[in-house]
Length: 140
Image (cartoon, rainbow, N blue to C red):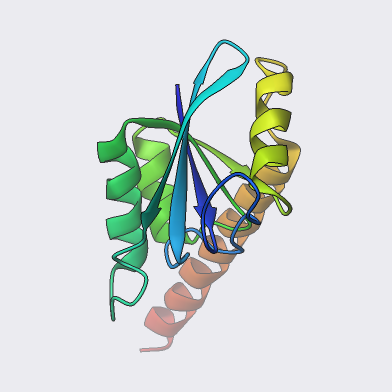
């Protein structure tokens, strides 16, 4: 199984980046059973894109065959792509190795609560945007 982690410089000893789409690099960890088998660091070629960094980063994760994505936060565009591809999103702040080990230990115990809370927040923001747009249209 592949886990893609948004990182600042990359590697297991690095910190998880606070953002996914514009993180400076990605650390891709391959896990077999409960063991880390391979670690690769790839610079994020989309970090400095003027537009669409999240979309491109999400598609990159899909193309890499990741089953899990870890970052401090996921923007709405990248979250939509990852969700559509069935990639589990984990919100984590701390060291990359700790994030991976926590995920491995957790196994099938359930979905990350922080990720669900973040999703609720995103849905509430989208709902508010829809309500605002409706109000604007009704005023015309």
